[in-house]
Image (spheres, helix red, strand yellow):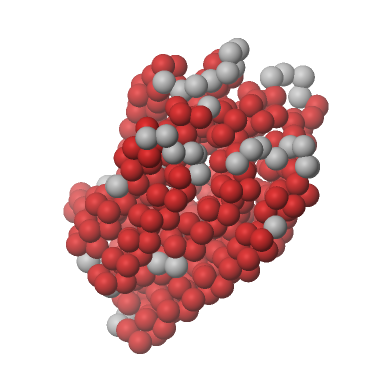
Length: 407
């Protein structure tokens, strides 16, 4: 995790310096068009992880094989739907609504298509990823993640020597990295996990069960994607790509810290699910408490120095003349948002382990959907771009309270 942190920060510095503020902003806002659609697939990804962990806890290899096959088939179907949505609605949004600098529309289209390719390849890797996590082979997860980070660093360095349009080159090379990582996950799983080998088997009853579970998960998680990536689209409409570049810098730091915390919780989540499935309630609840506590401590370790010295740290990281306007304020607010959101992550895992998700997702989902319309209303009334983060913090503080009450 420490190596990923250092490599990720250095890679972001190189990419921003090579692409420039304008192209970096274009990459973030156009990539966000694709990411908006991930609410269709994040839910089924969570369902696959949950069902695999429960299947391992029950110790039935045949059932485990059916769970994996069903997950792969569902991801293929959702990927096809995602391609259809992005190449129609997403392309229309790019061509007719987003504010793209003159002469960069064709490069933006390349970014859209390549970002879609990255997302589809990543989604197809989800069942294999979930199998590694459910089996708790964290060493393999760490090695492949480190390899991915090094490949992204290589991409950033190759941009210096690319004779072609650097934004297009970056998008294409990132797609190549995604394909290589997907192949690594597939090869590892097929070698070590029996349930990932052989032909795919369709189980109608299990498909209905998993999609019903995922349906409520979809309702609950879609609000988060709309409030993050959707807010980026609204920021572009009101303030342009320069402010999107500042959000992109904040997003790099936010994602790095979030990955740091999520990787730690990845080791806890399958244990929470297995403990619940095997009836070990006291151990399960102890893991949930530790997950919430340690998530906060890890975020605070990053939050306190960054909050106090954001301008100096961003200048050290990107160069004093390369820090986009608004970036320090965005970074501070993004980390406050993480404190509010990730503290309830282990509660979320516990609810998924029980399978009783309908009421939980209905209440928290309805509240989270308030974020994007409130952000748009504030901008319409003349608020500055930082208010998108303030609205996010307020909404997810309410969601956090609801999570505690419901659990």
